[in-house]
Length: 90
Image (tube, rainbow, N blue to C red; front, side, top):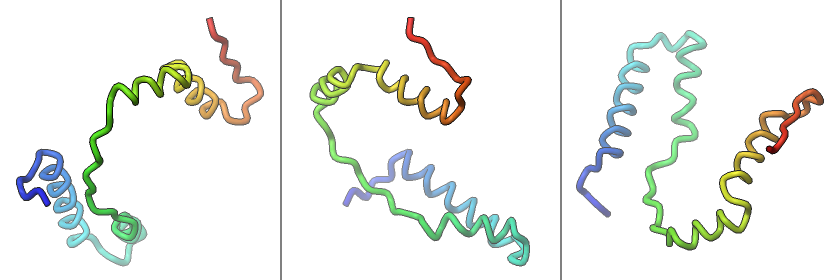
């Protein structure tokens, strides 16, 4: 395991410490304090992501239609069940 702290790990540690400090001073009987403790229930430790071949990833994006395909997915998700939401391609 890499023992040299990266900026991302340091930022993660700082956020966790700040949240823990805030929880330590919060009144546990309030609903806000109960909600603040919930993120720790689903916390997942940092995992390094394996390096991928960027050329293969770019080819995959091209095969599915490029950035426009991702834009259409986002627009479709944003439109939801709204029958008045129309997205036209130009």
